[in-house]
Length: 240
Length: 130
Image 1 (tube, rainbow over the protein chains, first blue to last red):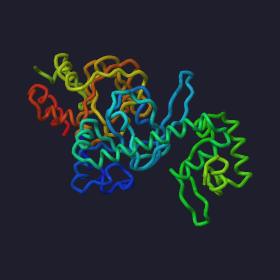
Image 2 (image 1 turned 180 degrees about the vertical axis):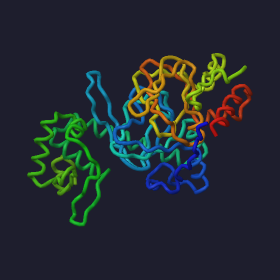
Image 3 (image 1 turned 30 degrees about the horizontal axis):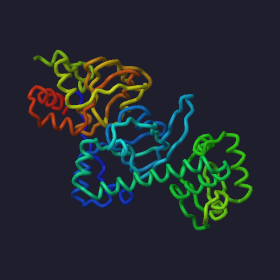
Image 4 (image 1 turned 90 degrees about the vertical axis):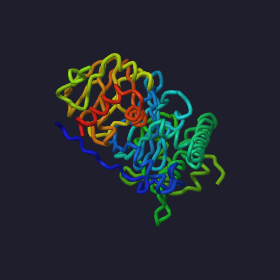
């Protein structure tokens, strides 16, 4: 007989992203209830959490690592719609609708993700108002970001959209260095960046060179740095 | 009913569910059709839900080799899900396959529930793999 080895799930209390997550306001004993019910998995780079068009089973909480959400259009072209990291949740929209996943979620690096089934999380939402409010907050921010992206695609040129992308990445994955630069802790290929701003690879490469030459950004190996935030705001046509 | 005759000898955490019980389980959760080929469980992961295959095929892959092809009536992932233990294969579902999924809350309801026939299957499965 194969022995099933029961393993203890990492406690929500010890989660490196606890302060940024939807359960951040819960007490220790409330968190322990969630720890006991959740399923925790470590996804390797390239493994998918869910696939566009399939049915959602519940809520994913990202503990560490980055996950890209991609959509494939009818021509088979893939574009990144969002990148989520520690403290973010996935599948929260599906809790309140019966819609299928509108994108595919893929780990961009080794990523630790917890999963809570829909019945359980709905009970938590009913019992704990702070969790409901935090989910509403996430949904509102998602909606704001989607509106921004939509208007950006309609009203801005590629140069402005690229400047805006660097500023968004600085906000979401930036780490302030002592020399004043911002290190972007996210490895994106040129192709992935191109899909994020809706342009061709070649165009993106040309503009990245222009940004480097102008001293707005820098690159060391595969790591990107935001060097001049104020100038980037101007290039993005945003008020500083 | 003798459920042992439905057991798959080579992978003991996967059992075959007889037709009359499939319809009972269908009342507890929705039947879903996969519109694409997909990896539904990765080798070494704890399944996020258990899967009862009601139409189509699921391939169990380890390394690069297909070790088994599951057909209608196969129930996989219950002991691993309930024990937080790793599934030993990558489960790949074929496009067009139909499943009933059982999450942890639903399995707990079955174990504590009012249908002794269903509860017995799940208890036996969990005891056998404990």
